[in-house]
Image (tube, rainbow, N blue to C red):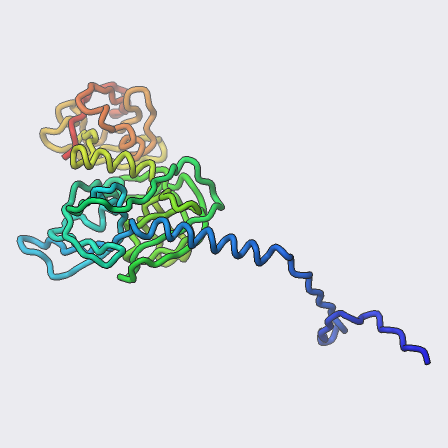
Length: 333
């Protein structure tokens, strides 16, 4: 007795393709490393979360409204970055607060005081009056790359210690702060953020903080932003030392022109450096010292602490003439 030969399609799956005939579906063999890769990913995330979680806090805020505290509340996130109770968060979380209450990862609650906030970078520092905390490890945002693992942790909608994961989507983005100034070199991530995540840490696979979660774009999904931790380190240091960030101030309202490039002066404040310099409505500013200006944001980047009290030259077009005028930036309030 001889065995019947196996058909040529033995061992394969076929599904009818109406009107065409048969379509072959082949399933590639599972890689023996798939499970190991998934385990490695899970271990990286859980390890990072264990490392950062003790430092993450929830912030409940009572707002100022006129002369009396507003009965409305808002909440956000933050993280301890020193052993003696200093906490980083967003300015828009704590700005105008009359009362701050911190919920620690172990469930304890403490009152906090505002050390300082900087709306222009959307960063703030608050402090609780206790010692021996486990602080977050601050990384280096200059070393991160697009595509690497990103983990966000915070209290979205009040759900404390919520973890989301994604990747670093892009670097070098710009984001408009609540004050109107442009924040440069912002991190874009698709690690999901929701209201209440603001001020929480964005960490790498080692559990090191690389950014401070700050914003989402609605109604888009998966487009979220974080302030680089290197920026936050500088701002936090200045807020602890001075309670504010010093910036130069000229005192005029301007509008960016695209063609011809420059800043159109639409108003000058009384008794301001711009007023004393002779700047007038209708002037078009094209340079600050030797640096060309194509937007108001270009000028903001130059009005740093080092510009305060230092004579500078504004090059401008006034009617059909080009003129240079001297101006001395003062400190912004």
